[in-house]
Image 1 (cartoon, rainbow, N blue to C red):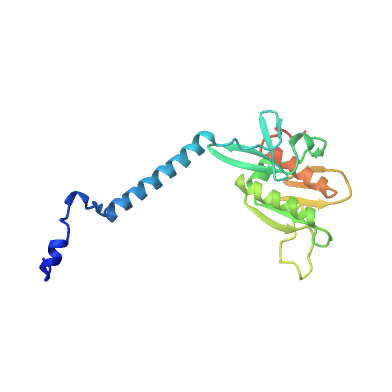
Image 2: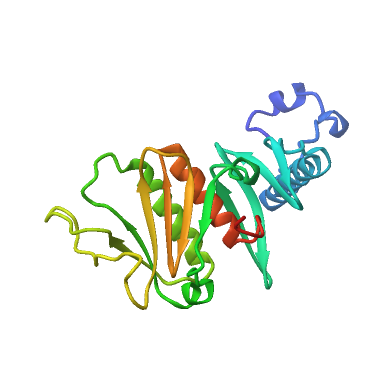
Length: 226
């Protein structure tokens, strides 16, 4: 009631039904739960879409050699090799069939059993210039032979200048050692097997081709040297 009775008499009575209902504010915890639920539903939907509608991966060019499958990946030929439960992905510059024209000479003195027992030196002539292809071949040999369990070291076929790191000088006559000599010379791809020594020769790309031919035999992808 107001102070002035006249004003009270003039004011119309209040109708409770006419007063609008003001909704109560939804608790913040409920809003948070709804938000989390919506996010979960969206993530699940995206996962299901990817699961059932994932596009197939495009494979590179495929080639086969015997029972081996090779795929062209970033400029190299890749294949899966396994032995005694161990699997390796091997990369080669050439397919096996592209290395079959490598000239191979196996002398009567070749001793593969002794070669496997010894420490293996990968050697080159440090006095020659333009050793880029020698470096490619030597790196391929070291990496792949290590994967087969060989103990690998680096050597020279002759004394090097002071700018080179010190390495032993080795050759086919070095006792109690297996030696792989990598030589970039002006000739087609060739392999020479003598005692516990392997001479890999070729001109640039042919040197790499001969190296792949040698490695294919060690992985038994090409089962023999002939």
